[in-house]
Image (cartoon, rainbow, N blue to C red; front, top):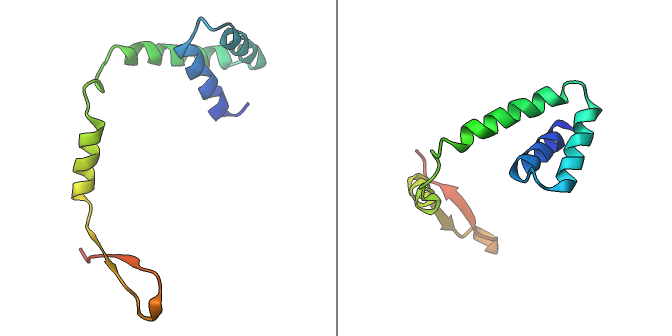
Length: 93
């Protein structure tokens, strides 16, 4: 497994620690590498600490996206000579 797959397995396990298939997979992963138990324990610690923060609760992602898009420079569509397809050009800053 690569580091990305390891992390995916750990997160899936932390989300559903009662899942027998994930218990088996994490057990196999733990046995496959000397430092894997320390890695799992560290992610478990981070998981527990971050679960209590609740800092992202109540964020309106749609409103934040609208505010972000409103701040982007506007583009204008122009027709190119010779019947070529339209392109978008940014206004100079």
